[in-house]
Amino acid sequence: MVRDTTILFGRTMKHITRSADTIITTVMMPVAFMILFVYVFGGSIKASLGSGTAYINYLLPGILIMAAAMGTSYVGYRLFEDRQKGMFARVKSMPIRSSSFLWAHVLTSLISNMISFAIIIGLALLMGFRTGAGIGAWLSVIGLFLFLTLALTWLNAIPGILAKSMTGASALAYPLTFLPMLSSAFVPTKTMPGPVRWFAENQPLTSITNAIRNLLNQQPVGQELWTALIWMTVITVLGFVIADFLYKKAV
Image 1 (cartoon, rainbow, N blue to C red):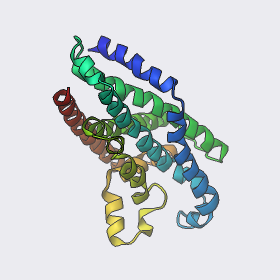
Image 2: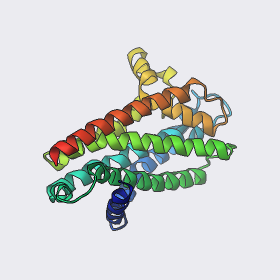
Image 3: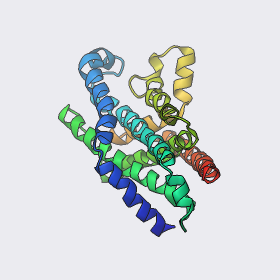
């Protein structure tokens, strides 16, 4: 399985290197939101954060979450394209572990999203982001980002396998991209009205955002980390099981 996955991973990575616009387009919107919120809305929003808190420091984790949501949506598109071109049937005719084909797409998604992660962090530093987080905290942030990317990639693989059209393959792209809006990504949940606040405080992305924010700001992570890990584990397992079943059935 490792050999098969490695060979197929090389194939999918070639698609990425030959189509740099994939990474560019997935980074553009998060960066645009970061610039918009910091330089246009940042002044008014900062009042709700309290003194001494730079808005870019508060905002960055949410931007990373949005980038992961956008970046993973491409796996649905690539799986749909492979199915349309007969790649599913070709793999079936070869002595290849079926799950290796899916894992190759997943690993490619992890690599491309880490590139987006690095670009966004670099731009945030230019915009004034500062942190005293140590190596351990940064490794934890990267680990959470990769885990979230893994979970969302498996989730986005499902419509890619099931879709009858390109639009259907990207069915989860917009909901996942704008879900951070209804979380603590851009503003504290305490500023939201009752029902919206309840949803924001209990949806997965809020705990993940808060865990990353606390790590970068050298604050106690507390229960947020465990809640985030539980959410991501559940999403990953469900996404993998469903995607793998549907792929074997489709093949």
